[in-house]
Image (cartoon, rainbow, N blue to C red):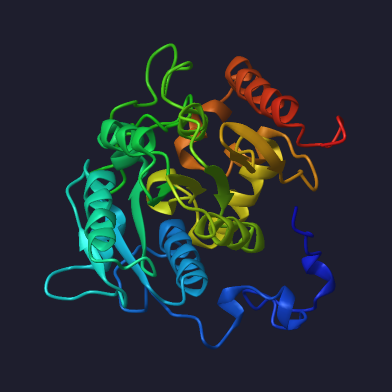
Length: 332
């Protein structure tokens, strides 16, 4: 388990904490970072996915001595980073269809293996729509075959690029274009969707982890660990979307942190189907603190507030806290 940094003691707002000892700094704090996803892209202000992709890819590049090929599913990340004929990618990068990035990445890995290029690592990446829904079958096949690919899912909890439609990762009660805030039970229905990290674990693959753009040290440590392993690996990164969530662009990292601190997005890692480490909650907050700043949940706070739904969401968070021992009550 990596030692957690107490950021308030470092006296800096600089990403990566340059006032820390060199060994404790993040990739983003070093002048020799690869800038794999460089400036000039067209992401929205405050885009969590742009942050997540930059953090993850720069870390992967350092871990692989800058020898990485990335395969990108169709989606927000592809659209805002490669408006033809431009590109913000400074690495070998392949655009696939919405649902076949895992299969294309498998083919790239097989081609490199046939050429004897064991020094080049392959990553695939996509949003929750291309991962949890459209690409679900290809991803399961990649896991089943244990292909030597690290798959990164940047989860902003809906199909943001095509108009904010519900995905299999959209949380209960959230308002989207296809789950409007109308009727007796407004927003997305309870009990639907998929927990992709747990599904990945059920495939018994070498490595599965969750990460957040709010915890850069934790995210980079997990990418580094994944790059040390061969076989199929999966990293699920939580990336708030100001446009689809109806939040302030300046609150992206704050909301990502509240998702973790409330227990709604637990941070953990697993190897071969068993949880090996969890990132404990620093300061537990009620789910209301996370939900209220997002307009997609505004209907929960009308007069009178929807206390039944709020209690049900709190129960989900509390269940996660118990399941993963996020408060350390069990000594984990």
